[in-house]
Length: 389
Ligand SMILES: Nc1nc2c(c(=O)[nH]1)N[C@H]1C(S)=C(S)[C@@H](COP(=O)(O)O)O[C@H]1N2
Ligand SMILES: [Mo]
Image 1 (cartoon, rainbow, N blue to C red):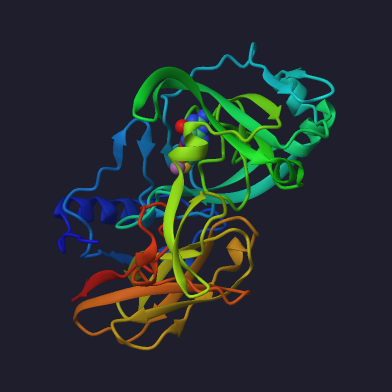
Image 2: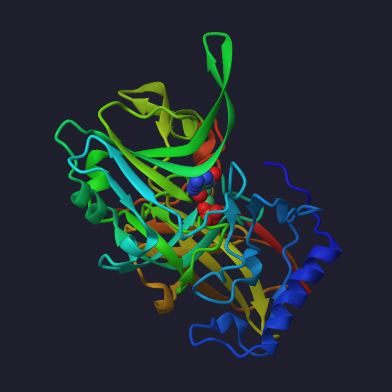
């Protein structure tokens, strides 16, 4: 991947100001040691000339250099949205449950809030999240009800194999078929196999960090599939449709796919797979200094498998053990790590992190991921450069 080896002075300045500015607020209890008084940021020298933090209203990236709390502020939470932001009147809103169920349902937000609530700490990323800034990810404390509970109320029939989730947002799509193309209006839709939908994990969420969902995060109700990438987390959830057939909508079957080579019995096979569980990833979010040592701060994301270790390497040195923060020990939430760098010498240095889970799975290098043709699920180790003065 080619990157401009220069950072715009304005972006560096903006980053420094944002970080410096945070010293003016009182720190929440989970504030990071990296932001202690007297800590100043060391700008990355590998950032592109221009970073488009808000490419459109439908796409907002989080400036990960400024992360100062475990939970992302609700007005900074990243977003990607395909069909604008539908305005939904909570008074008339209904979640419809239809198809192969014993009892179709039409639930108001109050009906849903009356069901047993559960909290979930979940940090997810868009499957398109990648360098140079890794800004399509955020971490939240969500509140809602088990999807399981709602599906039990409706009674999923034995023939049902696929549970489809449709958002209230929709748009015109060209559907290609053997050289012809048909223009039709479709809702954002994703599906889960029966077993996954009826498992204890997926939730229907109405609150983020203790407040109602924002219009960006899918007010009034969204699906969350803990440990999976962002695409299945259907926002503005309008309908759950239970069916026997596989759901082949655009965002299920075509848009979110990975094409990757895999060795099977000594032969290279090209596989197309759906976007599901988050791949093991770590990245360095910022570097700061107190004048003597430097501190590297980063974030780990994965599918909920416990983490064995995170390491940091400087230039071509040895891997050094980083420390996972006890403030982020929830299963599905972001995990923070820090590594203290002593005796950094003046000049430009390359820093990279890698994470290993308890199953021995190691975050791949960019070279190891070269067999992946399409850009989604990019979890490669991500080298960053800083200039030490
Ligand atoms: N209804 C609806 N849900 C959606 C989408 C969408 O376009 N419409 N985008 C998906 C994608 S690709 C991602 S990455 C996440 C982003 O969630 P966020 O906006 O809360 O960050 O929402 C998912 N859910
Ligand atoms: Mo996404």
